[in-house]
Length: 305
Image (cartoon, rainbow, N blue to C red; front, side):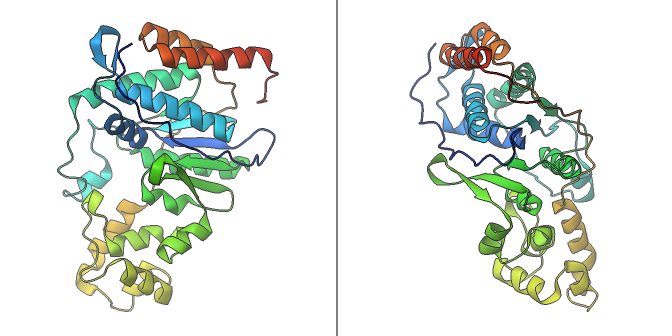
């Protein structure tokens, strides 16, 4: 398999086990698909001489994350790029100008195939973003009283941090920082539940949200410290001319926990089936790694009940 030069795998510090069954793991599929695509050489190919850098990087990341977190179940959320969400309809400039390489777009369906073959849940529906499925997974975890780990490179997910919900956020040297409520406060001087209000005021260049005029990160935090919420501040008459737009920005920044999440149940990964898929794709090193994991599954008692 021609693979070119590969970067070292991301270093993920093992988590303390919260329960014998482990946490629910929710992953922003698009976020890490993009990171893998841009991190690995474009010379990595699969069967049919097709690009495979994102597949290889994402698959190895997901395996390593599973080994580190030992989850009871895995949900991978995806954007639906061909269908606009209510966010795009409500604010025309939202995420405008984004362009994606065809080589990356061609790999996304194969990534979802890999996730499904492993026995994990793909969450994807028209009108919703990957973030929304992370919020839906967090809501499910609360109802079931499960801890949850949420892996995403989008800081909007900091609104989901809680005592039982930890954000796994990529930082320098490929490491994942563990973000809980305390870390959100340390970074932004706001509580997790204030993050949508904070984004509305500060703005978000990556999503083309301009925020309130003359208010930056420090100013947004100071306003929320004083007023508590964006709505309480607007009721005093602050930003009267921008009020409705700021309310819209807050709505856009708020993840939709009512996104249609498929059924989620505890499973032992089907590494053997994933290995067979990797062999068909002629990704030999990935297939060998999955074969080793499958062998461990066969010799170990089921860990998820």
